[in-house]
Length: 214
Image 1 (cartoon, helix red, strand yellow):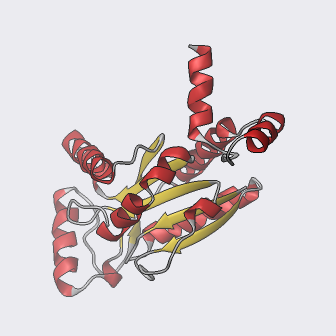
Image 2 (image 1 turned 120 degrees about the vertical axis):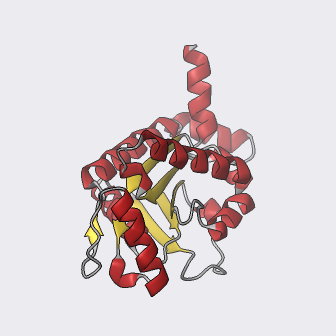
């Protein structure tokens, strides 16, 4: 099977996480392609050529990437059928203030509602303070945010907060999820023989199993 990791990042931490996810999936025998729409927003994507998709975006100024939202809207129908997952990257999720966590969840809920997408697996990763990549204004702003949250404020250095064990756990959950979506070979062959072609990995198949066990 093949999975697309679709993400947007300007400062690099989300891409670093995407590369880690790709490597982890490869170790489990799942081929991946990665696409950063911040680098090439107009590149066409044949999403229907993939069996599953993982989407990732950082939160900047209380918003996810709007370019990514346009892709999600474009492939809405397909995303409703194929196994998909979403991960966000932010500093707010690592705050000791519960209200910051609630804010991240509200931003995520609003984003998924806007794009009319309901991934069955969603998670939040802590990002990084990459002072070296900020312009003067953003460096000062992020320094103020870090000071308010009790974080590092020395702008001579960059700081990474991503919990890589959490990322590994997310990948393991995703692999288990897509395997549950897989149609048995014999059943899949019959369906494709006597009806229009169907996806080998389908959320509909997983929902059908849930209905049978209910």
